[in-house]
Length: 408
Ligand code: PHB
Image (tube, rainbow, N blue to C red; front, side, top):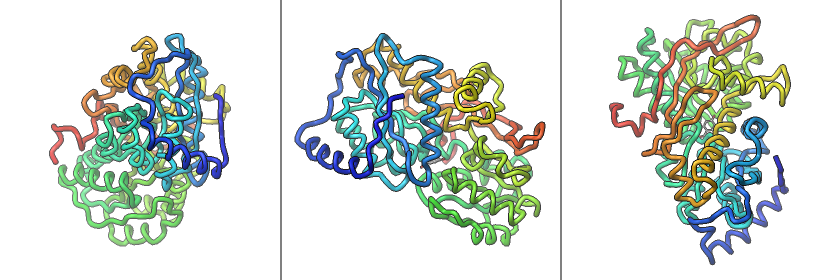
């Protein structure tokens, strides 16, 4: 995958002058055609800072897709142009870089946005530019309502949290304490875990909100344990933050004390489990992907991942989202027979069915959000390796925030 990485300073200088130019002339236009025989995909990932590992994961998914499915589609040569939005606190940068991708680099579509603030900051730009973007991760429900040009291939935190709340209430858990990251996807997780849990008769007896990049969880876990809930529910954006949370939970013996740990899958990504060791035992999580999913697409995906990145490595859900994001774009371009106009691409992505390592997933044509299985998993030692083992599944889960059949 060609990479054009600039220094942060170059990014900022380039973006500032492009922003001025963009004000004078609207970007792109809705009816761009592949006159040059190319499909240009702008890629926006966190490649530096605390969450750089996550950027690498999505990037590996993109590479993996191209290694398996080639670098041409509908007769067009696929060119990827990668930009670093540096993580969660850089909405302005993400917006400027997106503008640069469309204006200077003539990207036909952008794939990226790991973090909610970056997707939110970009929404109005897409509306002005009338250009499409595929959200690779950012998981706050409202994002796709901020621009009609967003399509999301990941999940929403309400999707994972609501069914986990419902499952917990059904399985004898009566009280819970919530600990979530203090920003939009965390608030969404807190609200929707509570909705699912209380609907089933559960009671929330306390909660805390923690800094997005928190590395210190001792006070929160102490307060939670003192409240003596049946369970602690948690969401955070993964990576080193999740490792810090799980390590502290281990140190304090949360699960050993009889309190169930309920988390969204962000906290227990498959590639981090061996680090946690027996702290993972009995941890219940909900998410659209774990490596144990038994289908031919997942088997081929894992095989190729190991071939490319190492036999001892395993892919996590972020790799899957990069892979599926690329798959959705290829599928759309094949369907439009190389028509790269925004109208054609959006039309092709709405209602698309993706043959994902997660199972069959679809893009809801109304909301442009993904409809997918949410697996309930339990941390177990299997053949000497810690794993998220599927114990239940909710098929075809829609974002509950936008699902009229879900009571509000
Ligand atoms: C988000 O900012 O929306 C986000 C980031 C990382 C996650 C989930 C959600 O794992």
